[in-house]
Amino acid sequence: MSRTPVYNFGAGPAMLPRAVMEQARAEFLDWHGTGMSVVEMSHRSRHFVAIAEQSEADLRGLLAIPDNYRVLFLQGGASTQFAMVPLNLLAEDDTADYVNTGYWSGKAIKEAKRLGRVHVAASSEAENFLTLPKDKDWQLSEDAKYVYYTSNETIGGLEFPSVPETGGLPLVCDMTSNFLTRPVDVSRYAVIFAGAQKNFGPSGIAAVIVREDLIGRARPGIPSLYDYAVHAEANSMSNTPPTFSWYLCGLMFRWIVGEGGVDAMQARSLERSRALYAAIDASDFYQNPVDPRFRSRLNIPFTLPDPALEKTFLEEAGEVGLVTLEGHRSVGGLRASLYNGMTMEGVRALVDFMREFERRHG
Ligand code: PMP
Image (tube, rainbow, N blue to C red):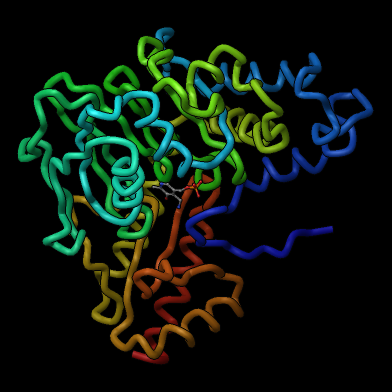
Protein backbone atom coordinates (compact mmCIF):
# COMPACT_ATOMS: atom_id res chain seq x y z
CA MET A 1 0.00 0.00 0.00
CA SER A 2 1.63 3.22 -1.05
CA ARG A 3 0.89 6.69 0.16
CA THR A 4 -0.22 9.04 -2.61
CA PRO A 5 2.86 11.20 -3.01
CA VAL A 6 1.43 14.67 -2.61
CA TYR A 7 3.57 17.48 -1.33
CA ASN A 8 1.72 19.43 1.32
CA PHE A 9 2.86 23.05 1.53
CA GLY A 10 0.35 23.94 4.24
CA ALA A 11 1.38 26.05 7.22
CA GLY A 12 0.45 23.28 9.62
CA PRO A 13 -0.35 20.59 10.40
CA ALA A 14 2.44 19.85 7.98
CA MET A 15 4.09 16.92 6.26
CA LEU A 16 6.18 14.64 8.41
CA PRO A 17 9.12 12.72 6.97
CA ARG A 18 8.15 9.51 5.25
CA ALA A 19 10.50 7.49 7.49
CA VAL A 20 8.74 8.78 10.60
CA MET A 21 5.31 7.98 9.21
CA GLU A 22 6.42 4.47 8.27
CA GLN A 23 7.91 3.84 11.67
CA ALA A 24 4.70 4.99 13.33
CA ARG A 25 2.73 2.66 11.05
CA ALA A 26 5.04 -0.30 11.71
CA GLU A 27 4.77 0.20 15.47
CA PHE A 28 1.12 1.13 15.55
CA LEU A 29 -0.44 -2.16 16.63
CA ASP A 30 2.41 -3.45 18.73
CA TRP A 31 4.89 -1.04 20.24
CA HIS A 32 8.22 -2.79 20.85
CA GLY A 33 6.70 -6.22 21.52
CA THR A 34 4.36 -4.99 24.25
CA GLY A 35 1.31 -6.25 22.35
CA MET A 36 -0.14 -2.76 22.70
CA SER A 37 -0.37 0.37 20.64
CA VAL A 38 0.94 3.61 22.09
CA VAL A 39 -2.64 4.94 21.82
CA GLU A 40 -3.75 2.25 24.26
CA MET A 41 -1.02 2.69 26.83
CA SER A 42 -1.36 4.27 30.22
CA HIS A 43 0.69 7.42 30.40
CA ARG A 44 1.87 6.15 33.78
CA SER A 45 3.10 2.83 32.36
CA ARG A 46 6.84 2.27 32.27
CA HIS A 47 6.61 1.98 28.48
CA PHE A 48 5.13 5.41 28.00
CA VAL A 49 7.33 6.95 30.67
CA ALA A 50 10.31 5.58 28.69
CA ILE A 51 8.93 7.21 25.50
CA ALA A 52 8.48 10.52 27.31
CA GLU A 53 11.93 10.43 28.89
CA GLN A 54 13.64 9.58 25.63
CA SER A 55 11.82 12.39 23.84
CA GLU A 56 12.95 14.91 26.40
CA ALA A 57 16.52 13.61 26.34
CA ASP A 58 16.60 13.86 22.54
CA LEU A 59 15.18 17.38 22.49
CA ARG A 60 17.68 18.43 25.15
CA GLY A 61 20.48 16.96 23.07
CA LEU A 62 19.29 18.59 19.84
CA LEU A 63 19.23 22.10 21.32
CA ALA A 64 21.90 21.59 24.01
CA ILE A 65 19.32 22.75 26.56
CA PRO A 66 21.13 23.72 29.77
CA ASP A 67 20.29 21.87 33.00
CA ASN A 68 18.65 24.91 34.55
CA TYR A 69 15.80 24.75 32.03
CA ARG A 70 12.73 22.55 32.25
CA VAL A 71 11.17 21.02 29.15
CA LEU A 72 7.40 20.68 29.25
CA PHE A 73 5.09 19.02 26.72
CA LEU A 74 1.72 20.70 27.04
CA GLN A 75 -1.73 20.63 25.49
CA GLY A 76 -3.56 23.62 24.13
CA GLY A 77 -1.20 24.32 21.26
CA ALA A 78 1.01 27.35 21.00
CA SER A 79 -1.95 29.69 21.56
CA THR A 80 -2.39 28.55 25.15
CA GLN A 81 1.12 29.86 25.80
CA PHE A 82 -0.11 33.33 24.82
CA ALA A 83 -1.95 33.20 28.16
CA MET A 84 0.37 30.99 30.17
CA VAL A 85 3.36 33.27 29.64
CA PRO A 86 1.73 36.31 31.30
CA LEU A 87 -0.04 34.21 33.92
CA ASN A 88 3.29 32.80 35.01
CA LEU A 89 5.65 35.74 34.53
CA LEU A 90 3.54 38.86 34.97
CA ALA A 91 1.56 40.18 37.94
CA GLU A 92 -1.52 42.25 37.08
CA ASP A 93 0.26 45.58 37.60
CA ASP A 94 3.48 44.48 35.92
CA THR A 95 4.48 45.49 32.43
CA ALA A 96 5.63 43.20 29.66
CA ASP A 97 7.20 44.41 26.42
CA TYR A 98 5.97 42.93 23.16
CA VAL A 99 7.32 43.28 19.65
CA ASN A 100 4.56 43.47 17.06
CA THR A 101 5.66 41.90 13.79
CA GLY A 102 2.44 40.54 12.37
CA TYR A 103 -0.46 38.19 12.90
CA TRP A 104 0.94 35.85 15.54
CA SER A 105 2.64 38.45 17.71
CA GLY A 106 -0.59 40.45 17.37
CA LYS A 107 -2.57 37.53 18.79
CA ALA A 108 -0.13 37.20 21.68
CA ILE A 109 -0.38 40.92 22.42
CA LYS A 110 -4.16 40.78 22.44
CA GLU A 111 -4.17 37.91 24.90
CA ALA A 112 -1.54 39.48 27.16
CA LYS A 113 -3.57 42.71 27.29
CA ARG A 114 -6.39 40.78 28.92
CA LEU A 115 -4.02 39.76 31.69
CA GLY A 116 -1.63 42.62 32.39
CA ARG A 117 0.04 45.75 31.12
CA VAL A 118 1.50 45.47 27.67
CA HIS A 119 3.95 47.92 26.19
CA VAL A 120 4.50 47.51 22.47
CA ALA A 121 8.24 48.15 22.36
CA ALA A 122 8.50 48.00 18.59
CA SER A 123 6.21 47.43 15.66
CA SER A 124 6.49 47.07 11.93
CA GLU A 125 2.78 47.72 11.42
CA ALA A 126 3.48 51.04 9.67
CA GLU A 127 5.53 49.07 7.12
CA ASN A 128 2.64 46.68 6.62
CA PHE A 129 4.62 44.01 8.45
CA LEU A 130 6.93 43.59 5.47
CA THR A 131 10.06 44.14 7.55
CA LEU A 132 11.22 43.58 11.14
CA PRO A 133 12.13 46.27 13.68
CA LYS A 134 15.86 46.16 14.55
CA ASP A 135 16.44 45.30 18.21
CA LYS A 136 18.58 48.39 18.77
CA ASP A 137 15.48 50.50 18.02
CA TRP A 138 13.18 48.65 20.42
CA GLN A 139 11.85 50.98 23.13
CA LEU A 140 12.18 48.62 26.08
CA SER A 141 10.63 49.47 29.46
CA GLU A 142 13.14 49.46 32.27
CA ASP A 143 10.85 47.46 34.50
CA ALA A 144 9.55 45.02 31.89
CA LYS A 145 9.12 41.56 33.35
CA TYR A 146 9.96 40.12 29.95
CA VAL A 147 10.32 40.98 26.28
CA TYR A 148 8.24 38.87 23.92
CA TYR A 149 8.77 38.29 20.21
CA THR A 150 7.87 35.83 17.46
CA SER A 151 10.97 34.41 15.81
CA ASN A 152 9.10 33.52 12.62
CA GLU A 153 5.85 35.12 11.48
CA THR A 154 4.12 32.22 9.76
CA ILE A 155 1.63 34.30 7.80
CA GLY A 156 3.75 37.29 6.81
CA GLY A 157 6.76 35.09 6.06
CA LEU A 158 9.37 36.95 8.13
CA GLU A 159 12.08 35.49 10.31
CA PHE A 160 14.48 37.01 12.80
CA PRO A 161 17.98 36.04 11.63
CA SER A 162 19.44 36.15 15.15
CA VAL A 163 18.51 36.41 18.82
CA PRO A 164 17.53 39.99 19.69
CA GLU A 165 19.49 41.84 22.35
CA THR A 166 17.39 43.00 25.32
CA GLY A 167 20.02 44.37 27.67
CA GLY A 168 19.43 41.61 30.19
CA LEU A 169 15.62 41.65 30.23
CA PRO A 170 14.18 38.11 30.13
CA LEU A 171 13.37 37.10 26.58
CA VAL A 172 10.28 35.05 25.65
CA CYS A 173 9.93 33.62 22.18
CA ASP A 174 7.14 32.04 20.20
CA MET A 175 9.29 29.75 18.06
CA THR A 176 6.38 27.74 16.67
CA SER A 177 7.19 27.99 13.00
CA ASN A 178 10.99 27.76 13.09
CA PHE A 179 11.66 25.54 16.10
CA LEU A 180 14.26 22.84 15.41
CA THR A 181 15.16 24.34 12.03
CA ARG A 182 18.43 25.88 13.25
CA PRO A 183 20.59 25.88 16.36
CA VAL A 184 19.36 28.06 19.23
CA ASP A 185 21.30 29.38 22.20
CA VAL A 186 18.66 28.48 24.78
CA SER A 187 20.59 30.26 27.54
CA ARG A 188 19.60 33.59 25.95
CA TYR A 189 15.93 32.91 26.72
CA ALA A 190 13.57 32.87 29.67
CA VAL A 191 10.88 30.90 27.83
CA ILE A 192 10.72 29.33 24.38
CA PHE A 193 7.57 27.65 23.17
CA ALA A 194 6.51 25.97 19.95
CA GLY A 195 3.47 24.08 18.73
CA ALA A 196 4.54 20.76 17.24
CA GLN A 197 2.43 20.65 14.09
CA LYS A 198 4.89 22.42 11.83
CA ASN A 199 8.40 21.16 12.40
CA PHE A 200 8.29 18.28 14.86
CA GLY A 201 5.03 16.43 15.11
CA PRO A 202 1.26 16.51 14.92
CA SER A 203 -1.06 19.09 16.47
CA GLY A 204 -2.26 18.86 20.04
CA ILE A 205 1.03 19.40 21.80
CA ALA A 206 3.54 22.17 22.37
CA ALA A 207 7.08 22.08 23.67
CA VAL A 208 7.76 24.71 26.34
CA ILE A 209 11.30 25.36 27.55
CA VAL A 210 11.30 27.41 30.75
CA ARG A 211 14.20 28.63 32.85
CA GLU A 212 13.83 26.95 36.20
CA ASP A 213 13.94 30.06 38.38
CA LEU A 214 10.86 31.40 36.57
CA ILE A 215 8.77 28.40 37.59
CA GLY A 216 6.68 28.72 40.75
CA ARG A 217 5.80 32.39 40.38
CA ALA A 218 2.39 32.03 38.75
CA ARG A 219 -0.39 34.34 39.78
CA PRO A 220 -2.37 33.05 42.70
CA GLY A 221 -5.86 31.86 41.89
CA ILE A 222 -5.26 30.80 38.31
CA PRO A 223 -6.47 27.38 37.14
CA SER A 224 -3.77 24.91 38.11
CA LEU A 225 -3.26 23.65 34.57
CA TYR A 226 -2.05 27.14 33.59
CA ASP A 227 0.73 27.01 36.16
CA TYR A 228 4.14 25.90 34.83
CA ALA A 229 5.02 24.63 38.31
CA VAL A 230 2.17 22.12 38.24
CA HIS A 231 3.40 20.67 34.95
CA ALA A 232 7.07 20.76 35.91
CA GLU A 233 6.33 18.97 39.18
CA ALA A 234 4.43 16.21 37.34
CA ASN A 235 6.82 15.88 34.38
CA SER A 236 4.03 17.11 32.09
CA MET A 237 1.72 14.36 33.36
CA SER A 238 -0.40 16.30 35.79
CA ASN A 239 -3.34 15.02 33.80
CA THR A 240 -3.41 12.64 30.83
CA PRO A 241 -1.06 14.07 28.23
CA PRO A 242 -1.69 13.72 24.47
CA THR A 243 0.27 10.49 24.48
CA PHE A 244 0.23 9.66 20.79
CA SER A 245 1.18 13.18 19.73
CA TRP A 246 3.99 13.15 22.25
CA TYR A 247 5.22 9.78 20.95
CA LEU A 248 5.25 11.13 17.38
CA CYS A 249 7.26 14.15 18.53
CA GLY A 250 9.70 11.67 20.02
CA LEU A 251 10.00 9.89 16.67
CA MET A 252 10.64 13.23 14.99
CA PHE A 253 13.35 14.13 17.50
CA ARG A 254 15.04 10.75 16.86
CA TRP A 255 14.76 11.33 13.14
CA ILE A 256 16.34 14.78 13.39
CA VAL A 257 19.17 13.35 15.50
CA GLY A 258 19.73 10.64 12.89
CA GLU A 259 19.74 13.14 10.03
CA GLY A 260 22.49 15.24 11.61
CA GLY A 261 20.61 17.42 14.11
CA VAL A 262 19.51 21.02 13.85
CA ASP A 263 22.59 21.97 11.78
CA ALA A 264 21.37 19.60 9.08
CA MET A 265 17.81 20.95 9.38
CA GLN A 266 19.19 24.47 8.96
CA ALA A 267 21.24 23.56 5.89
CA ARG A 268 18.25 21.85 4.29
CA SER A 269 15.84 24.66 5.07
CA LEU A 270 18.28 27.13 3.52
CA GLU A 271 18.60 25.00 0.42
CA ARG A 272 14.84 24.63 0.06
CA SER A 273 13.99 28.27 0.67
CA ARG A 274 16.81 29.62 -1.52
CA ALA A 275 15.58 27.51 -4.42
CA LEU A 276 12.06 28.85 -4.09
CA TYR A 277 13.08 32.50 -3.58
CA ALA A 278 15.42 32.21 -6.57
CA ALA A 279 12.53 31.02 -8.72
CA ILE A 280 10.31 33.86 -7.48
CA ASP A 281 13.01 36.50 -7.98
CA ALA A 282 13.92 35.23 -11.43
CA SER A 283 10.45 35.98 -12.72
CA ASP A 284 8.30 39.11 -12.99
CA PHE A 285 5.25 36.93 -12.72
CA TYR A 286 5.72 35.92 -9.05
CA GLN A 287 6.38 38.42 -6.27
CA ASN A 288 7.40 38.12 -2.65
CA PRO A 289 7.07 41.52 -0.93
CA VAL A 290 9.15 40.82 2.20
CA ASP A 291 12.31 42.78 3.07
CA PRO A 292 15.00 40.38 1.74
CA ARG A 293 16.97 40.62 5.00
CA PHE A 294 14.11 39.02 6.88
CA ARG A 295 12.64 36.55 4.47
CA SER A 296 11.54 33.40 6.24
CA ARG A 297 13.12 30.04 5.39
CA LEU A 298 9.91 28.35 6.43
CA ASN A 299 6.95 30.29 5.06
CA ILE A 300 7.14 31.90 1.67
CA PRO A 301 4.16 33.98 0.61
CA PHE A 302 3.94 34.99 -3.03
CA THR A 303 1.51 36.63 -5.39
CA LEU A 304 0.56 36.39 -9.06
CA PRO A 305 0.16 39.42 -11.33
CA ASP A 306 -3.59 38.86 -11.35
CA PRO A 307 -5.27 37.51 -8.19
CA ALA A 308 -7.97 36.04 -10.41
CA LEU A 309 -5.40 33.45 -11.53
CA GLU A 310 -4.93 32.12 -8.01
CA LYS A 311 -7.82 29.70 -8.21
CA THR A 312 -6.43 28.23 -11.42
CA PHE A 313 -2.96 28.02 -9.88
CA LEU A 314 -4.28 26.10 -6.88
CA GLU A 315 -6.36 23.76 -9.03
CA GLU A 316 -3.56 22.98 -11.46
CA ALA A 317 -1.02 22.57 -8.65
CA GLY A 318 -3.38 20.17 -6.93
CA GLU A 319 -3.65 18.08 -10.07
CA VAL A 320 0.10 17.42 -9.95
CA GLY A 321 0.14 16.70 -6.23
CA LEU A 322 1.19 20.10 -4.89
CA VAL A 323 -1.38 20.95 -2.25
CA THR A 324 -2.32 23.57 0.37
CA LEU A 325 -0.63 26.47 -1.38
CA GLU A 326 -3.27 29.06 -0.56
CA GLY A 327 -2.21 32.05 1.55
CA HIS A 328 -3.71 32.54 5.01
CA ARG A 329 -7.38 33.53 4.86
CA SER A 330 -6.48 36.90 6.43
CA VAL A 331 -4.11 37.95 3.62
CA GLY A 332 -4.94 35.88 0.54
CA GLY A 333 -2.32 35.28 -2.13
CA LEU A 334 -0.31 32.07 -2.15
CA ARG A 335 2.11 30.61 0.36
CA ALA A 336 4.48 27.66 0.45
CA SER A 337 5.53 26.40 3.88
CA LEU A 338 8.76 24.43 3.89
CA TYR A 339 9.14 22.77 7.27
CA ASN A 340 11.37 19.92 8.40
CA GLY A 341 9.16 17.31 6.74
CA MET A 342 9.37 18.95 3.29
CA THR A 343 11.91 17.55 0.87
CA MET A 344 14.01 19.22 -1.80
CA GLU A 345 12.15 17.03 -4.33
CA GLY A 346 8.95 18.73 -3.22
CA VAL A 347 10.47 22.16 -3.72
CA ARG A 348 11.83 21.20 -7.15
CA ALA A 349 8.40 19.92 -8.15
CA LEU A 350 6.87 23.22 -7.04
CA VAL A 351 9.48 25.32 -8.86
CA ASP A 352 9.00 23.27 -12.06
CA PHE A 353 5.26 23.69 -11.80
CA MET A 354 5.58 27.45 -11.24
CA ARG A 355 7.75 27.84 -14.35
CA GLU A 356 5.33 25.83 -16.40
CA PHE A 357 2.36 27.78 -15.03
CA GLU A 358 4.04 31.08 -15.89
CA ARG A 359 4.77 29.84 -19.40
CA ARG A 360 1.12 29.07 -19.96
CA HIS A 361 -0.44 32.04 -18.13
CA GLY A 362 2.28 34.69 -18.10
N1 PMP B 1 2.35 31.02 16.81
C1 PMP B 1 2.73 30.87 15.54
C2 PMP B 1 3.97 31.57 15.07
C3 PMP B 1 1.98 30.08 14.67
O1 PMP B 1 2.36 29.93 13.39
C4 PMP B 1 0.83 29.41 15.15
C5 PMP B 1 0.00 28.49 14.29
N2 PMP B 1 -0.03 28.73 12.97
C6 PMP B 1 0.47 29.61 16.48
C7 PMP B 1 1.26 30.40 17.29
C8 PMP B 1 -0.77 28.99 17.06
O2 PMP B 1 -0.58 27.63 17.21
P1 PMP B 1 -1.74 26.66 17.73
O3 PMP B 1 -2.71 26.53 16.63
O4 PMP B 1 -0.99 25.40 18.04
O5 PMP B 1 -2.33 27.28 18.94
